Length: 196
Image (cartoon, rainbow, N blue to C red; front, side, top):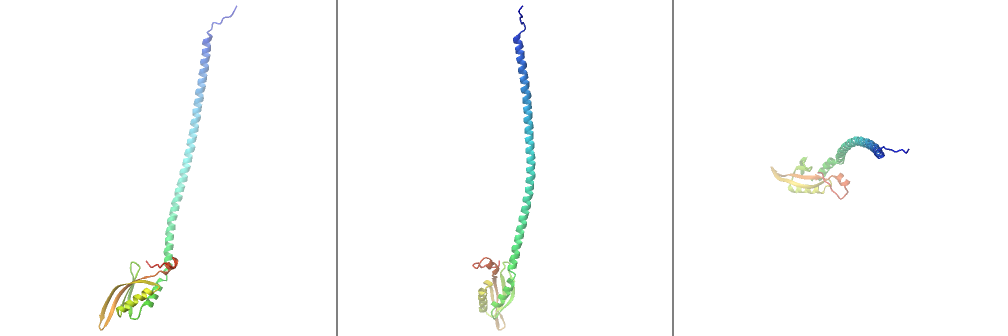
């Protein structure tokens, strides 16, 4: 006798397809969870690497900032030392100026003129006070100062005639400047630098 299958084979096929679909869906779900976990681990690893790089860069920036501070301190120290060196060089170059000044004072003073006071004003000019036998002697003295290689720009501030008995004397104040030959030779023969 022939065998007849009375079971609903379509229903079984549908259940088998449904089970396959559910397995595939579960596999995809598991795979997507695994993929998300791997991506999360990778991103966490990248963030951790970037943070360690940032910490390294911050420490290096701190070191460079400290080095820059030290360089700035050294620059300030260098500037101060160069200023000191310039002052010392200026003093060294001007060391002989007082000797030249007194030498020129003795060479430029004509007969009949006597100095009573010698001083330096706030601007560095030499102020000469003295007594002369006549105003003509004061004029002669100023011409000699102007011709001196170490003195320049004589300016007459005061001339007063004062009588002492039968004698008449001229009291005068002359202001002049010292020519700084060290600056003159350092800057070339065309410049004539005077004491400030």
